[in-house]
Image (cartoon, rainbow, N blue to C red; front, side, top):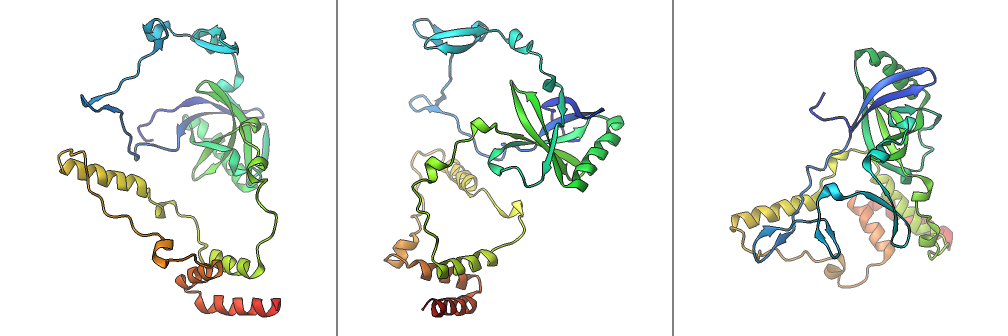
Amino acid sequence: MPSARPIWKGQIRLSLVAIPVELYSASKTGARLSFRQIHEPSGKPVKYEKVVPGIGPIDSDEILKGFEYEKNDFVLLEDEEIDAVKLETRKTLELVQFVGGCEIDPIYFDKSYYVVPQDDLAEDAFRVVRDALRSTEKIGLGQIAMRGREYICALKPCGSGLLLETLHYEDEIRKSDPFFSGISKTKAEKDLLEVATQLIERKTAPFEAGKFKDHYTQALRALVDKKLKSKGKRKVSTDADEPTVAETKGNVIDLMDALKSSLEGTGGRKKAAKSTKTTRKKAS
C-alpha cells in the first residue's frame, strides 16, 4: 500500500453484504508546475487575508458559513451544525442500480478514486463484487457523501481492485443545444468524408496514456531552468516562433488537398488517390 491517506472510509453495501473499504484519489497534481504571485518591487510572495469591509483583517475562528437566501441576507451555519447533518451515505455506499459499461455519457464523469478493502477479512467479499461486476460487464451506481457534499458515483473493476468515479448531477451539465444550434445540419461531402474516414482509420490504435506528454509543463520547466542559469534575469530570449502552416504555404490550403496530404504522410497516398478518383467518377 502506498504512503497515501484515504480520503474516505466506509462500506460498500450490496443488499445484505457490507464490505469495509477505503478510497484514495487516483490522480495527482504534483507533476505540474505551480506559481506563486510575487510583489515585483520587493520580490516577496503575495499573501491573502480574510478582510471585512470597514473592519479590516479578521481571524479565521471568527468566520461562519452563510447561505444568501436574499440579497445581502444570510442564514448562518456553524461547522458543528453542518457536521451534525446525518446522511447514511457519509459512511455507506449502497449499490442501488447497475448499468452497462457504456451507458453513462462521459460528460457526467468527474473524478476517479481507487477503492481497496480495509483489511483481509473484507477481501473475500470485495473480490466477489469485483469479479461479479467484471463478468456481467456492469457498473454499480450509488451515492456517497464526502468533502462537504453528496455525489452520485459509479463503481467498476480496475485491475485487482475497484475504481469509483464521481458523477455530475443532471442539473450541473449545460445543455448542448445553445452551443450547437448555429451549426449547419448540412452533411459533409461524400468524397471529403471518405478521405477523412481513411485518415481516422489509419491513425486508430489502442489507447496508451504514456504516449502523451505534457509539453506545456516541459516547456515551462525549460524556461524556469533557463532563468535559473541566467541568475534570474527578467528578460529571457526565446527562439522565434515556428511558422504556421498558412505562413509556409503562403495561401489557403484546399480541404481535399490537406486531407490527402495527411494520408500521404501516413503511407496512404495510393489508396487515397484511387479512392478519391473512384468517388468522383461515381459522382459524375
